[in-house]
Amino acid sequence: MICEFCGEQTVKKKVKKQHWLDGRLYVVENVEAEVCTECGERYYYAKTLDTIDRLLKSEHEVIDRMDVEVVSLK
Ligand SMILES: [Zn+2]
Image (cartoon, rainbow, N blue to C red; front, side, top):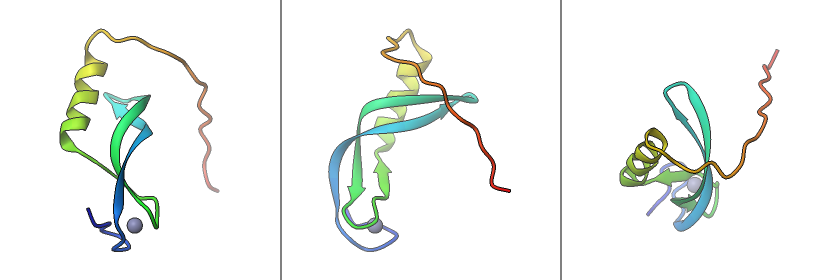
């Protein structure tokens, strides 16, 4: 597809996505996305986002956990 921001082509890639659901942050690996070759903007398929939501709401395997720093620009 064509990037909405810079007009360049995107390519299909598997990415690591930060995903919020019900106020919790998840990191989801191997997420198929269209990634802009110029600016790096990512586009996700609605079907993929639904799949992630369904996975997280059901019983799922957790492969890793990470601490997340929360900071603020002054
Ligand atoms: Zn772009």
